[in-house]
Image 1 (cartoon, rainbow, N blue to C red):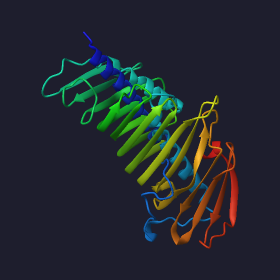
Image 2: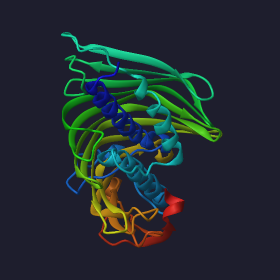
Image 3: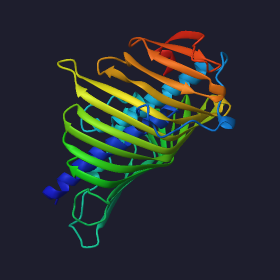
Image 4: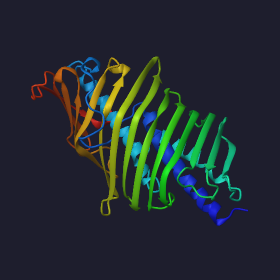
Length: 347
């Protein structure tokens, strides 16, 4: 029979699974990148490794950076995992799939040496999900030292096939993840986690450290630190690899009267992509990007990309529809070339 402690544990596990899957959005998008302030952890890449930004590549570089930032920003929405998620359709499908696992992870009575609970569930259209909760101290709750792992084995849900492993280990936890009030610090690891669909596939490997503080509905902050996250994307005959390094995302969500809530996102870090000669660029937020929950894209915010030979690109949200992209190719402080693109075309 399921005890009150078991009910609490399962509710926490369900909320955690949603948080884990939100972190997958970066991988599903084929990029990675999010928020942090202008004093980030990345630092400029060595000159020999830095891409020189030119009229030929600056819009592509801006697109890579913005897509990277805002898809990692989706991972930062872990801060509101117990509330509203704005993940993409494919991420929502993954959330729904993984949430089916946790209600079946009933807990045995606490034991002195802890308990590991596992169960394998069939996926809707073939394959399965193997879920495990490691209750290190055997108290029937998720707390510091405990971990949750989900392994997808050719798990087919509609048009998508999932494979690989996601693991979250708690460093600290207070409050209830299933509520609007909690604090949590955890390490999330992705090991050959892949999502394949008709258009292509993405495989991700890496680790993220996440600190979350939620004080009320739609009132939360999160800091996400990425030492290295690598994704390999295949779309049609084109395959590319992107790596995000030494990055820090900071995100804050606040109520916005009767109009839902707003999210402020900033990011710092270095990234490279085979579509950019596999050379590095440094992304820094000048002004956080602010997005209303009722809008598809941010209406304000500015970030810069620093490349080799002093070259720089500046990206400024003009409104929730368009972004101004400017190039300073010689590093003299004057942006001599510019273009305006829609958010939709960039991310």
